[in-house]
Image (tube, rainbow, N blue to C red; front, side, top):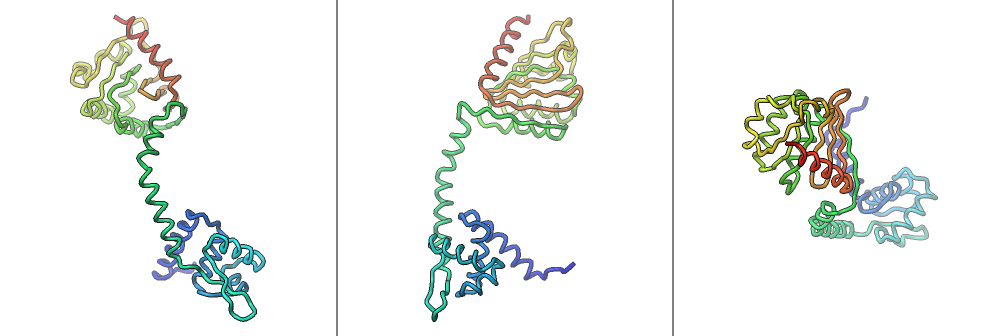
Amino acid sequence: MTKLSSNQNHTHMNNEKITLALNGYGLDSKEIKVFLALLELGVGNGHEIASKSGIIRTTTYSVLEELIRKGLVTEVKKGRIKHYTIEDPRKIIDEMEERNNLIKQVKGDLLSMYQTAEHRPMVRFYKGLSAIKELHNNILKEKGLKEYDILTAETDWLQLDEKFFSDFLQRRADKGIKTRLIIDSKSINLKHQKKNYDLKREVKYLPTEHQGAFTSEIYIMPRKVIFIAEKKELLAVEIESMDIVEAQRFMFNFLWNNIK
């Protein structure tokens, strides 16, 4: 296998970056090859540009016409044969900088519109313990989250990774996020139940006869619902849908108001 020298490797990486930038500018792969070939040649005829770019001559001419139309290449008179040269690349640079500045100016508005849109149902899946942990970390990163409701068999949830999830409870409280929980009765003796006030939790317990009713965790948040299955397969489904949020919130409130 041939090893590239440090200079060759640097040039290769630079060419990759230039290719990505030109693609972002709107050039396709053939246009980029012809453009870069002509950039290196300075001035060239169709045969020279085709040879340098590795594109057949007939295609090279049509690509050159398109680059002329885009204002990136110009014809130059040099005897009887048509020659071509690149327009000052500062034209591209200036236009790309202008686009970047425009994106920066509207970035806040775009994110705000995305976050406040009322009707954008979305479903995400998380599989395995590491993905479930990341899901919980993301909950704590949500802007403006002040409270949410939970239906849980908390003993089963903690046993997934007691250290991580006990720490999660404390981090959630430290962020001032309040929760209402309906918990199955087998979780009533967990150590942290004595610290519910400090953990900013309000808790109600299902009657003993309904122990085992919860086979998954359900988080009912302001704009989404999260279901976490733990029994047969560790899997979470996050659904952003106000219709589902409102239905789950109604059921939670019905249970909450009817549990002594």
